[in-house]
Amino acid sequence: LAVEALEKIGVPEISIDLTMPTLVPAVADEMGLDGAAYEQLRAALDRKDASAVTAIGGKIAETMGLLLEYAGAVGNVIDKLEKMKLPPRARKECDRLLEVASMIRDVSPELSLTIDPVENRGFEYHSGVSFSIFSRSERSELGWGGRYLAGDGGRGKEGGEPATGFTLFLDSVLRVVPEAVKPRRVFLAFDTSRENNDRLREEGWVVIQGLEMIKDVFAEARRMNCDHAYVDGELKAVD
Image (cartoon, rainbow, N blue to C red):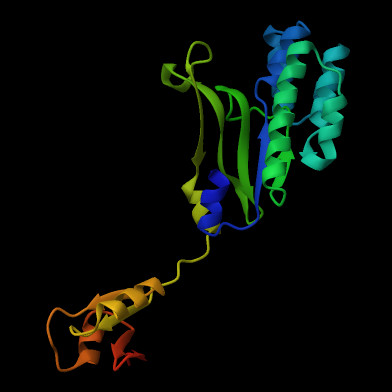
């Protein structure tokens, strides 16, 4: 829905980056990493700092290092993520992410689609597959969204109602949409037929029709800020 809306207003070269905010917490929980050690890991992942992840040591550093590495275009990383050994709950979370990626690829094969398994910034309250929206014409995100549990002011993680939504950042969107084309306006004399009125509107004209007979159609067209007048069955430019 978000991509469709952006495409309709002319946003070029849209790409979607998928993530699963619950994946890293599931790995950490099942491998017994919590407290300050987890916060250290989370900070390293947010910085995309592979050396800091390695410095944590142990099996979890190896696992998180691979998740950090396996980010990129869906076609390049999906097989690696499918074959990766993960604890049971984390494996389930990862499989959900890959399932959604495959579904999107099947429905919109032309869409640029990437996966970042460890991304979490901005998705702290999300409870499932989430996404960021980009355009190659803009450095900042155009929007983001995903699955969450509604309630507790948007912070609910348990007991809330499952929901999915997205937010578009209009300041970023407006920087990439094409400049709006000024609508063409045509003035029609009072006695112009309904058929011609309808036809011109269907062709995309903004139609202004007079409410009374007038002598100078072009003068009235100029007064009504029209760039054309419909005279004797023809569209004529207003000087």
